[in-house]
Structure formats: C-alpha cells, structure tokens
Length: 138
Image 1 (tube, rainbow, N blue to C red):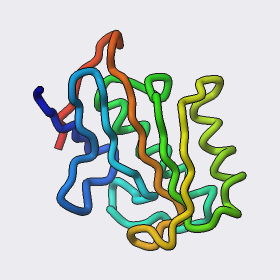
Image 2 (image 1 turned 90 degrees about the horizontal axis):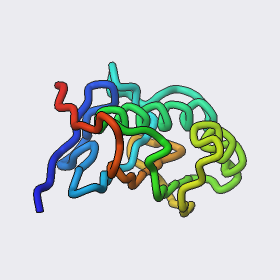
Image 3 (image 1 turned 30 degrees about the vertical axis):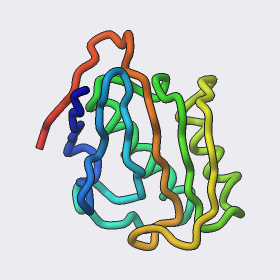
Image 4 (image 1 turned 135 degrees about the horizontal axis):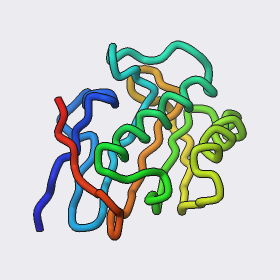
C-alpha cells in the first residue's frame, strides 16, 4: 500500500522526523498539532482557549490540504497538561465539529513539546470526498 505525505505551509512545519499527515488508502493519519503559529513556527502566546483555537486552525489546514474537513474526522485524541482545562478545550473543539461527533479520547500528560498546554491528533476518512486530493505546497 502506498503512503503519501500531506504537506501544507498553512500549518506549522514538522518540528521533528515526521509528516504533518500521511494518507494511506482512504485514511488520513494526522500528526498531533500543538499551538504553533504557521508563519513563525513559534508557540502561540495565550491561555488554553487561544492555544486550542490555534491547534484547531492547524488541524483544519492539514485536513484542507488533503481535500477534506472536520466532517471527515472519525477519531481524535486530545492531550492536556491540565485536565482542569477540559471544559474550555471541549467548547472550542465542539465549535469546530458542530453536530458531527467523532470518537475521542482525552489523556492527561505531564508535559507537551515547546511547553504547549494542548495537543490534538486526528484520524479522518477521505473516501467519497468530492474533489479529494493531496496538496504538496511548500
């Protein structure tokens, strides 16, 4: 089976030896996104709400690069440094998905890269998506 990297300059570049996302068959495996600003590669200043908004914007950019959107997401994993932030993250996250409710796990972690407060990864289906494609913009 062919693995195809999905790359966009509208989301932060990978900060290690990994891809923003990998398309294999009809599944898109997106690497976890932390609140890095795509233009600078720096961690967004702000609290959990601002950081979660940036993370969801980064995820949206990767999904868009694959020709899909949040409605195609089937599973998410949320990593939180502080579970007391769950309600705020849930509010921002829910606003992106609307009535679509993918499967989800939320995990408390000791720390995240670059001192981020939140990281979210998604798994999405590209099957039957009109205009699906993969962008390789640099």
